[in-house]
Image (cartoon, rainbow, N blue to C red; front, side):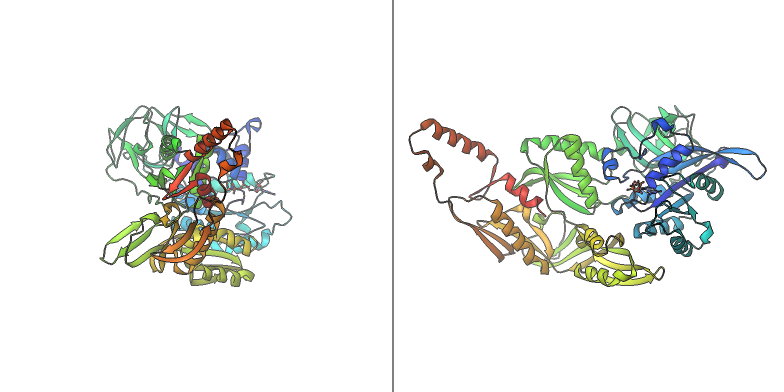
Length: 601
Ligand code: GTP
């Protein structure tokens, strides 16, 4: 039956280990993309994905593959390839893809060996009982060391080194053998064909022309075109206008059976009606038990987004509404800042997520925006015993604080053994506590740390890479919170607080943050008619100060008093300039100065 000839697999790989290139070769080898239609990274739809070379949204493609059995009879199988993103920020998407598969191709660069992120995903796949197919990629590279890395992988997953396949996504070598192995090693889906339909939503995207497109994997039963479907969590009922598979463009079919992956179109306009993790069933013969859902992605990092031009505020709201349709993890609510005007406080999965949202706002919506320093979520307890959740430093409670808790992560760092000392130093400087260390082989070490999330989200990854010449890799997952010595640093201009510059930092880092910001603002803010102190303060205690000296000459004095029109022009010009000024107390600050101060590294 169709179910017995179905194989669903995903590819677990580190960024740049060649997953997209291998996927391209598979599309070609199976003939679903004709050579003349081929373009690099066929499955990465978004422009940003292609430019940055990262995969963000999970995709599912179906490919036919003919295999000749031992008895000489040929049979054609349907292979479902479920794409997974490689970056930490998007690991919640990975767990979704794993849940939709019976097998995982563990793809490792033969020159670099396995990386922390891959290892974490591999453990997830093993826990999920997936069949693991170990593959070394890029064996065409002169620097490839297939033997060494095959041993590493074999000892990790407990197989024979000969079982580790060797391929090159670049030349296509080994790809047909890999497809054969998938058919052989991955079990068919085990759903019950005549049970009431149950399908898991693993993605839903908004398409301008077709409305919401929902990606599902059918577990039991079947869904057919034109039938009425029900969302189990809400009981909402929709008509199924179209159902099909992606191969690699959408192809309508006569339905989806157990184990099949495809898309549904119901004409719904709001993705929130098609919630990821929900179970779809048939309205006529509904299932009663929902499938086990996914964990909701939770925003971990917050920052303010403000239009540089205040009149763009409605456009920014509209753009965020649109982005939200395809991105359940993005959150936002209106925020007002004295320095920056009207904007939104946004929540993200991590810094890469933040950057991608910002870039899409600028590129796809033509908005000029400024974002404030990212912050994690703090739990602040005041002396009267109430606890406040603080995602915005300017909301840090005034007065006496009994304690502050900050989120921590459990981090896994994989590094060549010669960098163990360097990595320890870095983690210590970032307030990390080591919880263990394992040697994967003589030359590769897996280190475990508990680290404050706030210390990781900014430049930790870059610091780790540059100190280990790019060899160490990092993975982390949330691990609760801890009490910490944190304070809020305020920046004052002539005694008035500039809200956008407040930051919550560790006590020991308060001074350096204060000095950096006051120096920066002194450089950027033009002189006024009077002397302006720029101060950094913790509570009422000033920890650093710079002074912007008063302006000496009257600008109009330049005009010799004679030429009236010139004088008027100059005044007009000044007025024009004023419009873009923000008044902080008595001090006029050009918006650009704030933008520059927040933008600088
Ligand atoms: P993400 O989408 O970011 O996870 O990256 P990826 O794993 O999909 O990597 P991608 O396919 O974009 O390949 C990364 C780089 O490795 C590209 O420059 C490819 O050209 C190169 N590459 C991929 N496969 C091979 C291979 O078999 N041999 C060689 N020499 N280079 C390869």
